[in-house]
Every structure is written in structure tokens, then in C-alpha cells.
Image (cartoon, rainbow, N blue to C red):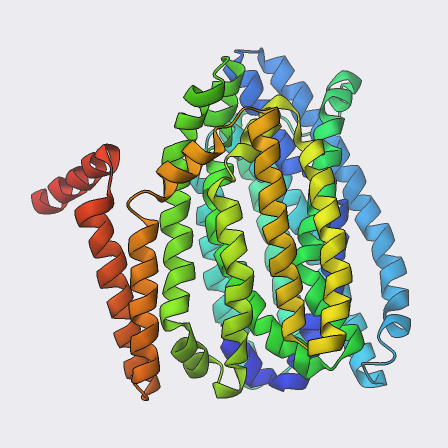
Length: 478
């Protein structure tokens, strides 16, 4: 989809679109993680068998905070809208600044609607309705893809993309609100606001705010800095790498939210130390399978994929994406520990640690872009993320007693080695074959054969073997 949009709009307008999107996404800094807080509070209430009134008070309190922050986002948007011309006067011309302002209006509508939907999805997840958000997202993606393709074929304008995104986000928010009330039999209002709940939730909200700042800075600092210091074409090239990295990040973070209710129940019931760590192993192995498949598959077949989908002039995006993905993979392997922090209400210390590494990332990004150009943005983010992984795992080990070495060893066991062999073999094949399509199919096939074949034959544990046998039994019965 990103390749189609890039080809329809051209490097310059696509770069303008990515530039203003990066600018607008900083509004998410006001999000405060209300969706995650909503899930944690409802899961804790249900684990402790609290009354329906207690659940309703939590919903009303967090929804009140969400509504107030949505108004704050709208207010700040006005200031941002007026500042666009001054911020980008050196990199965009007058026509591009006008287009940026028009797009920003619809991007703001999308951001506010998406923010409200996240809190509503937090209610659904707290009640353990895992499939709703995914189903709606799939429908939204299909609708968005169809609409944008049909529109851009006839009218080549980035503004249309923002109109489609804003409309779909608003519709999704309204549908989710109605469905959430009916499915869970709760009332989403302000009548049961409770100051005590707000006070107890505030530390986690502040921690999630800091983490959102950190995530946005790490994800957008390169694109934002390139937009200010260099050209829209440079932003476009870096955005190709970020598309791959964003898809990778989205996939590896799915298990984190899905396991929030279960981890919260375990912590509330008093599970600690090694027994708690053991409950995190199987979800972490799922993250390794998902994340490793994307990362090492992209190492194996990413170069012909980039050349086929985007064009040979974007091949350097492969290296930048790999630089970003490798430390993220190591970091997310132990990401279930975040749910333990949430359950113990200790997220703030982690966020403060991340702030330090993010400050290093920002400074290093500016220095490296000046010295070595566009790839410096990826190197700076990757290096700061490596430092983040080291410090955070020390914190997990000493403060919440997660057996980090045990978790990593059992999460990687029987999976990582075969992924590494598959990536190496696939990369060699992709460099031997000149034809791009044949190279993509051959290198991808070699990776799948080595990585998944090795895992299925030698790497799976007893629980995975049992699940695999059940799938085979169902298949043959059908």
C-alpha cells in the first residue's frame, strides 16, 4: 500500500505528507495511556471480584480523563496549525505549507477519534473480548485500502488520504462506543467519577505519558529532523524504512496487550520471582516466533522485496530498517515484563530510564545526520535502543525480581538459532540471483524452510508440540 501511494503521489508530495504526519503525531504525547490504564483497572477489579459499581467507577473516571485530554489535543492542535509555516519555512514552499495545513485538520480529527477508540478498546480488553479490536481493524484496513486506491487512481492528492483516515477513525470510534456499552452492559459517562481512583491511577498515567513521549521521539525524531534539516525526498526514503519497522513493531507488541489481564491476575494472586517468570516464557516465545519471522525474513529477502515494491533507488532503506529492528527485537522479547510493572504500578521508573536513552537518541540523531547523512538517524535510534535494553533488563532483574537470563534463554531456545541460519542462507541466495522476483521467492523460501523447518522438527517445546498435534488432528479430521 505504501508503495502504491508513493508511486501515485511522487517523492515530493509523499515526503510532504510524511513530514506533516510526523509533526502531527506528537499530539499523541497527550494520550496518557488511558486505554492501558482502563484495561489494568478493569482486569484488577474482575480478578479481585469487585462489584459492578466499582468497575463502573473506574470506567467513568478514566473516561473523564480521556475526554479532558481529547479537548487538550484539540486546543494544542490550533497552536500547531498556526506554527506549521514557521517550522517548515526552510524546507517547504508556500503551496506545500498550504497543503500541510489542510491535511493537518483531518489528521487531528483522526488522532482524536483514534485516541477515544483506544480507551474504549481498553474496556473491551479488560473484559477479555480479544477479537473485537482486531476484527474492526481488519475491516478498517480493507475499507481504507479500497477507498485510497480508487481515489488516488483518479485524483493524485495526499489530502484525500487524510480525509479517508479521518472519516474511518471517526466511524470506528462511534461504532466501538455503542458496541462497548451493549456488549459489556456498562455505562460510559461521567456520573461515577471517583477522585480516589484517579489518584491511584495517576502514577501509571504519568509513566505511560513519559513512555509515549519516548516512543514518539524514538520513532519520529529521525523523520522530523530530516524534514527540518533536509529535503522531502530524504524523508520519503527514511519513511520506507520506518514502514517496515512500524509493521514489525505492531506485530511484536500484539501479545503484550493480549496477556495484560492474565499477568495482572497472576500478580494480584501473589505469584512472584521464578514462578512468575515461568508464566511469561510461553508468550515471550510467541513474540520471538512472530518478531523473528519478520526480522530475519526481512534480512534474508528484504533487499529484493524493497527493490520490487519501491524501486532500486530505495535499497538503502533495507539497511536502515534492519538497524532499527534488531535492537527492537531483543527489547520486545522481554516486553511481557511491562505488564508486571503495570500490575505493580511501577511503570514510572521504567519511563524515567527511557527518557535518558531518548535524550541520547535525539542528540545523537542530530549529530549523525550532520556527519553521515540519512543513515545516521537509524544508527542513532538503534544505538540508543541497545542502551535501553541493557538498563531496563537490569531494572527488571533487581526491582521486580524477573529472572531475565532464564526468560531470554527459554524464549530463544529452539527458535533463534534456526532463524539466524535461515536469515544467513536466505541472504546469500538473494545476493547470488540477479532477477528480483526469483531472488525474492528463492531467498524467502530458503528462510522459511530452514527457520520453520528447524523449529518444527527440533525446536518446539512440549506445549508447542501439543498445540501442533491438535492442529494436525483438526486438519485431518476436516
